[in-house]
Length: 353
Image (cartoon, rainbow, N blue to C red; front, side, top):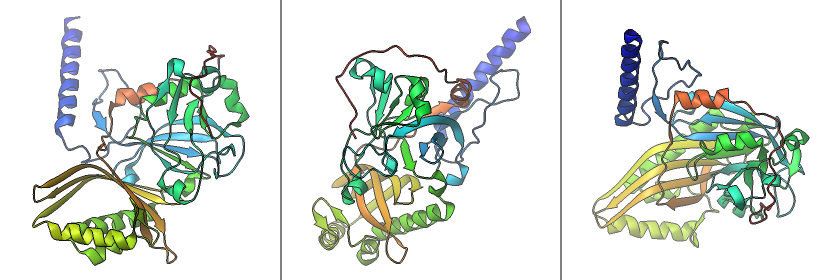
C-alpha cells in the first residue's frame, strides 16, 4: 500500500511538472501526435498539456463532421472525433435568406447560446452561431442570418439527414461535447460539398507563401510589392484598391521606424476561397501601437494566383485553447445515446436561414 501511495504521488508530481513545462514552452514548437492513450499512471505514458487551434470540418457528401487540431504545419493535423450530422432541407450552397440551404465556406463560431434561451425541442440544449454571412458571402451577394451548429431536439431527426432551415444539427449529447472545443471566435468551422476538396496540401503551401511574401513587403514598406497582393475587387472601409494604396503610402511615410510582428499563422483553404489567420503586432515610432488578429481573405485571380479580396483586423487575439490527452480520451470515449430529450417549449431565440 505504501509503495502504491508513493508511486501515485510520484506520478502526480510528474504530471504537474509536465503541465508547467508546457506552459513555459513555445506554443507551437512542435505539433504533438494526438492519439488515444491509457489514463492509468502505471502505463509508460506522459501526460501533456497541449495548445492548438481547433477546426471542425463539415462534409455534406458524407453527412459527417470531423473535429481536428489545426497546427501551423497543417500536415500534422490530427482528427480527434467524428460526428454524424443533419443539414438544410434543401441541397446546395446557400444563396439567399429562406432557401433552407446550408452555406459552404470558412466560419468562426460566435458566442454560444444555451439553456432557457433556446427552443430546446428544435435546437436541443445548445447552439453555436456562425458568422454567416462573412465578408466573402457579402461580396457574393448572399443573404440570410442565424446559421448555427445546434442540437437536434429529438435525436431521431439526425437520421432524416436534411431537416434544418440551413443549420448543421448534431445529436444533443454531441453538441454539448463540442461546445468546450469550439470556443467563440477561436476555432474554425469549414463547411464544404466535399471535404476532400478542402485544405489541399499544394493550395495551403501556395497561400502560405503568398502570405509570408505579403508580410515581408509590409515590413519592408515596399508599397508596389505590397499592393500587388491585392485584388482589383479589394475594398476596406469604403476604400478601393487604388485609394487603399494611397492611404498605405501615407502610413509608410509617416514613421521613421515601423515594426510589424506576425505570429500564430494558420492557413485554411476551401474550393471557393482561402483565409490566412494570424496575430499581428504593429508599432510605428512608439506613437501608434496595434495588437490583435488579422484575417486575410484570398480568392483566385484569372491567372490562378491567390489575391486578397478582403481583410479584417480585430483587437481580439487568436488564443488556441489548452487541453490534455485526458480531455481527448474523454471526448473519444463518450458515445451518443439515442434517447428522447426533455422538451422545453421556449421561443426566445430562433435560428433563421
